[in-house]
Image (cartoon, rainbow, N blue to C red; front, side, top):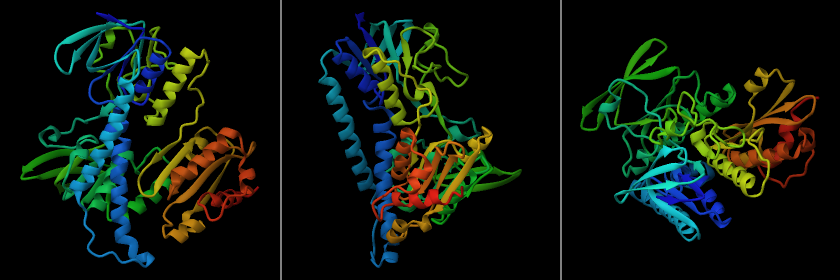
Length: 461
């Protein structure tokens, strides 16, 4: 048995940086990784999907370029080259992360599957054979999540895709049926439509991205439908049948009526489930919720002293930047004796459909639920000079403000560079800048952010 000062399970966007920081602080540290260094973000999430989003956007712009006076004839989607580019970038990012970890003195990188033996003892089944036992007083869990697979008749009989498996495709599906109308489903649905697939998206809620306000959802739905993507809301798949030769029949229930859809590929994108099932947490006393997510306090501590959980495995916002922020909170509290918490931290996020949806703070629906005294500012992207000039006026800007304090409570920007525009307002929220100050701020012309003047001037005092 080897004894360490700290053991980290999972090398995602919290685990990897934390391992290096602890080792550099003089703590003998072990980092255990079951699969690839870098976690979901680098290997199955942000990095590979955004390379494909870029390829899909290039295809879209080639098709639309005639509107800007540029005629591109005979462009071709080469899925083999698209996948090759993605694989090259993923490999580069992964290798860079692993090289930096392996070069860190006092840090052992161990590839294998970890399970608890007791509160501070871990057994690792090594990927290259054999097993070892490790012991430490400080243990950090950054094991992330995997795709949730619903229990639907016939689903196990077909070769369905998840957000991981779909990234291995090197041919364009004839007809991609997407189960789930949220971030993952919408991003993949739009990109494969642009690659040339027929796409149907099935969402059980009344509207796609159901946690967002209805006007934002409706605007995005119209954008996707304009690209000939079929979207079925209030709908769910009830049965799958493999017809052989790459043909699948799916029974869809919509408001009490049934229909059958024939497709070639099915993507399951209905949510994520935590990677806690193999950890043997009952040996530690660490508490989880009914879905298996690890319970933590606002300092990311579990109910067991010395065991922490960071990133997606603890539930809450499942974003790379939140996982990384978890790491900064934990290391500063442990090594710099800070007193930081996750309480009241702003959670920005961006969905990389085209156009993007940048979001931060509370929505209009949430504000009404809290019975706050608010005003809502809206500006269609058709009124944004930069959008008109670049030929893409899809979407809108929306902000929720507090009538009494004039502070910005929440923002949604559905438009080109939506995430970047949202980030400008995030800084305003962090700095306590009121919306009326932004109304008269000087922005460079003609930036997208310049239209924040007009957005907030639309609020009548």
